[in-house]
Structures are given as C-alpha cells and as structure tokens.
Length: 226
Image (cartoon, rainbow, N blue to C red):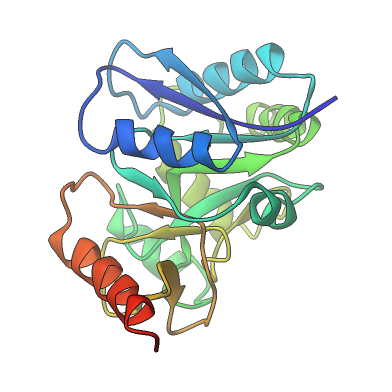
C-alpha cells in the first residue's frame, strides 16, 4: 500500500497552483491533478467526486482532497502523515458561516473556527466512503444543497461521524484569520491555539500580500541567526 496522495481538481492553471504542487512534490508527497469543468458547490457533486477519487486511489493509506489555486503547503510528509486522522474525515474549518449566516445561532460555540470549509479534506479511503454513506442516508439529504451549508447543518445537529479542524492543526483558512496567523521559521503558526498547520487556504484570494510578508519576515529572522 502507498502512503499518501494529495488530489487536486482544477479548472485551469492559475494563482499559486504551480508553487503549491512544487512544494508538495519537494516534500516527497505524491500529487494528482484532475480537470474540473468549473466551480460547483453542490453536496451531491462533492460526494460523487469524493467517491471517484477514492476509487482511483484506494491503494493509498491516506488521501487529501484539496482546492488548487488558493492553497499553499508548508511542511513535510512525516508531519502530514501524523496529522491526518484514521477514524474520520477531517474537513477544514473557517470563521465564516457560509452560505447561510443564519446558521450561526444553531451551531455550538466551539471557538472562532467552528464552521465547515469544503476546500480541504483528509482521511483514509474507508473513512471517506463511510462519510459519504452517512451523508447520503441523512433524512434531509438533497444533492442540490450547498456542500458547506449542508455540513454546517450537520454540525448544528451535533453529528459526530466527521470532524472539522477547529484548532487548525492541519488546515488554516485565512478569511478573518490574519490576526492569528504568524510564521515561525517559515512555518505557519496560529497564535490563538498555538498550532502549526501545514496547509494554508486563502479562501479565493491570491496573492495575499500580508501572508507573504509574514512568511518572508520569519525567514529573515532565521537568516539573521535569531
């Protein structure tokens, strides 16, 4: 069995995709790039894509499903293997309750990153398939619903068959999170939770000058010997 692969679905090469793939490959992480017809947020299409990816990469221990053009990787394969859960699928978490801000009052307050982001997911092939089965069997499942909206509804129902990365241990979504984002020796650092996420998701905004500035400054301090 192979160890881990990051699967990207993209409609075109732009943004930070080339650098993202370069960083993953330089860390010894296998990358698969599949064409996508366009941006779609339907939960039904999301699950169909997950099942297709799992079928293709069933021989891997771990899978990471990722957006392509607005994500960057800072880490190693060893750290990635350590941080991906084996029992459930981990979704990225964000501070913004999209697409329905009215859901905020129904979702328990578990900290600022308590809403689902669908741009980054990680787990084992079996965990992905089990999650898809549970979602499709849910009483209110409708394939036309927006993926993040439906998953936020599940959070409001306290469903526990999946997890979101509420403390940004693996994934860090930048929207509304720049105050907590620091870099230590070139590694992203969440100053609130004191975690070192490996993937930074800019939520549709590259280039991000503030992120790049903080990253370069952290390398400058290293080069000065501090």
